[in-house]
Amino acid sequence: MTRPHSGTAVATVDDPAPGCSALRDCLHCSVRHLAVCSALSPDEVQALERVTVSQALPLGATLARAGEPRQHVYTLTGGALRLVRTLADGRRQISGFVLPGDYLGLTGSDHHRHDIEAIADSRVCRVALPQMKDLRARYPHLERKLLQRACQALDDAADAALALARLQPAEKLADFLLRLAAREARLGDPGLRVTLPMGRSDIADHLGLTMETVSRTFTKLRQQGLIALPHLNTVEILDEAGLRDLCGA
Image (tube, rainbow, N blue to C red; front, side, top):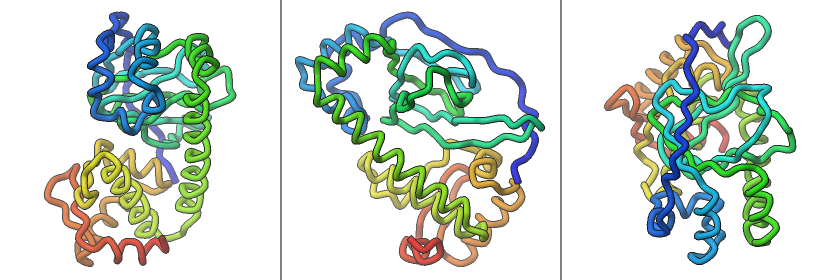
């Protein structure tokens, strides 16, 4: 079960100054190959840059609150965010984590469905909804890229639902680490050393466990020789096949 969330309120940070005004910035972005803007040619990127604002989010800041009208779409270019829903009794469920290259805007809702909170110093590229709609109409390949991303999000949601339905904490945690390792690999890292921008309590509220269970399960996986824990927020995968066998991947 998830626990009541007793964290302090955080402020929304909005930086109105365009931060991606130079073409070289977008073309040399370290996560461009992961972002939806990778569908655009260098010339087409100029049209995107004219309507893009780079917004900084310090640790603890809130990008949006659940129930607020949606006015923008976002691409995370650095840091990490969490998607949070708070139940009526105060319990918190983290629906997912947003990592560099991820796109926020694949929904048919007119309102935000989650609180979107920075769990590290972060930065997003922000585009107003009408301007993104215009870009999608002008560049069909961008629309196809967004459809591809939406299909991948559905697949990821199905995999996450299966992981949450598992009864054993070790299975849930092994699956979670493998999914993060796959992200590291897409960023160009071999994926055997996983950085955890989220804390143990965030992992617990994402997997439907207690923080104590998450900590014990990390220790169990380490004792079994499947992982090493050189730092609190770093996991080295020592036996990828063993993790896959554990979670049935």
